[in-house]
Image 1 (cartoon, rainbow, N blue to C red):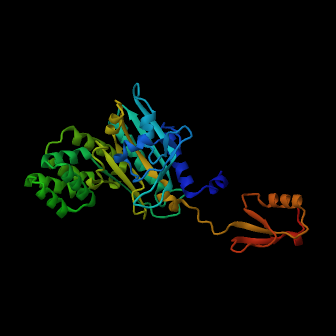
Image 2: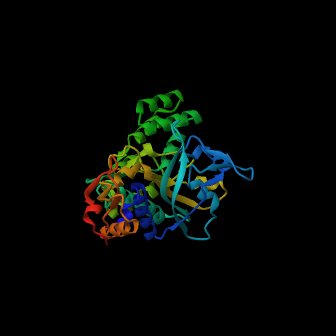
Image 3: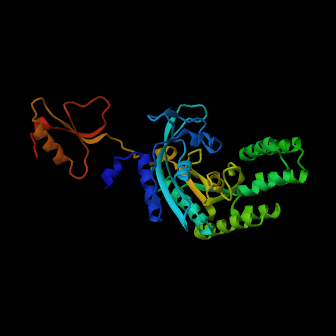
Length: 376
């Protein structure tokens, strides 16, 4: 089996490990088409990570798109659960052009829970996010690094929304305030609130939320001091408590700069980081509002892992292209040469038969088949 795994790219090996993890927790694979009707993404452009959509006209005249997002396809093509929670995982390609760059094919693995969500479901999603990061981080089995290094940041966007409501910000000021919180710029946030006419007390509450970064034990007292949030905060606290009791306290950071789109996420938003990768390799949250757009009653939560970002961590550090270069002469018999190659491949040895060594070929040792005359 190891010989087969060695043939996979780093992203493929990481994706296989993640899919195996999700299957072990009872998730079933969801497969979808590469194409969706363009209208699906055009009507929901505000929740897409992609700035542009790659579209084309299908043979039946419909305007189609290469999917820039997986969650929208799952929400559109599944039905409400009759009971319980439907647990799905996927391994898909998405097509995006970000920050004005060219379109790229990106590999994603992720999972979605749709149905009657409760504390256990949300804890399970976060636990699997943490297990995914643990699996992917440098120092994990199959990776090239040494120091195990990963972190999961979490926040509750409903708390941010309520503080923005208290400040009475209009739509443009609200968007500007969210941007300040995401970029952690308190002076800019104060300016936005002042120009919008927000009360000083409401402005101070938003500033305290912006600075509320730390472990759950550090952050929760700060959040409770900001006012009465009821179940929105207490439900968040219960999930964090469960994760701490599972031994994940040192890997959790409450950080409201990751609050995400308030029109999309509710209840929970999180991001995951590994090793020296500067961007989040995992992102997700609870997105009941997206299902409501489609007239559905189900609740939903999930996350996606960007395999392209962690591929380097999972690349095999092979120093050679083959262990043995078998050099043959012009009169070598092809059938006999094939038997000689097979005989030397025992134990997984990589053998390359060539008339002469191509420029740049990296090999461990060379054997002259013509001179040795050895045949299997």
